[in-house]
Amino acid sequence: MFIRAITTSTLMIFAASVGPGMGQEGPPLLVVNSKGVEHTLHLDALDSMEQVEFTTTTIWTEGEVRFSGVPVISILEALDAQGETLRMSALNDYAVEMPTADLEADAPIVATRMNGQTMPVREKGPYWIVYPFDRSPEYRTEAKHAQSVWQLKSLAVTD
Ligand SMILES: Nc1nc2c(c(=O)[nH]1)N[C@H]1C(S)=C(S)[C@@H](COP(=O)(O)O)O[C@H]1N2
Ligand SMILES: [Mo]
Image 1 (cartoon, rainbow, N blue to C red):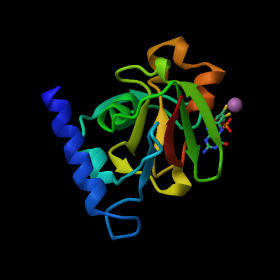
Image 2: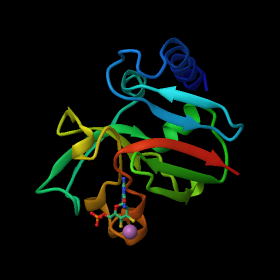
Image 3: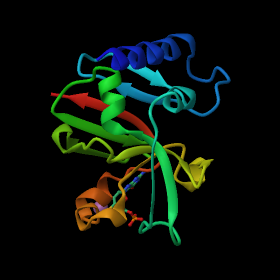
Image 4: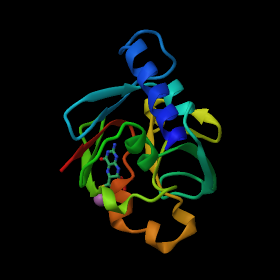
């Protein structure tokens, strides 16, 4: 709880001190919580959170790739975003919803890097929702693939 409080206030500082297009490294990730409050998280805010990393193949990439980033559930918890449904929207206006109850401690993640490199928009960046697909057949379903939103723009939690 104490650690979580620190994480939250760190994120608050980032959210308060930077705005869109203010020269921060990386584009923003928008998180809209259940109370309709918008938090803008930049790459450095995501990097300040506990990182999860895994190596997996995907249906979109060649060979094994290493993804690193922050579990979706950690982001929602850090911002105290509560609600039953998570809507994940992409820059191209693709959006998908999933129950927040399906979020696991380490999956899916908002991947900020592939093989240690940030991802340009043309390579499915800046952020990509990914599962450790090779870990279990349960991650290699049509539903999980549909939830693997690339060019992620926002996360929104609603009741
Ligand atoms: N940004 C973005 N992510 C997306 C999609 C999309 O259209 N845009 N389609 C989703 C769906 S429904 C599936 S099944 C897979 C499709 O991947 P494919 O188009 O490479 O087969 O990506 C998911 N992620
Ligand atoms: Mo799909």
